[in-house]
Amino acid sequence: MAVRRIVANIAVTETATSQAFYRDILELEPVMDHGWFVTLAATAQSPARPQIGIATEGGSGTPVPDLSIEVDDLGAVLERVEQAGLVPEYGPAIEPWGVRRFFLRDPNGRLLNILEHAGEK
View 1 (cartoon, rainbow, N blue to C red):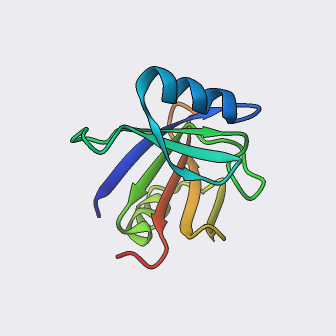
View 2 (spheres, helix red, strand yellow):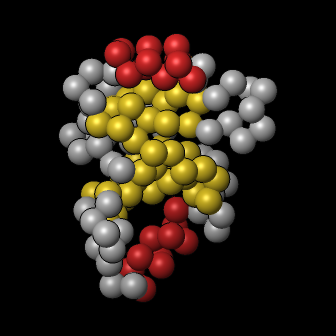
View 3 (spheres, rainbow, N blue to C red):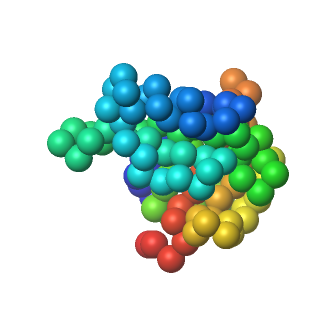
């Protein structure tokens, strides 16, 4: 199992103002826009291509998670969660926008959205 990316998420009441701020000040461009959730990324010239999420909700009626962590094998992570005696707060679920995911709290209470893109392995 490998982590593919980690995206910090910011809860907002609307996305347009924050999107304009990060675009105008840091030249981040939208790479995904669902209206309620927008992912902004550094330009293609940036080797690391860092990203940030701006969201009014977490999708499917969930709260905005603190971090979104994309992995290449969600099943392996779920197995580790079960072995640790932890219980996801949401999911696992296959979402209409093409991800399989679950929410889990870390020891500090941070809400993690752990996901893989459906069909990618």
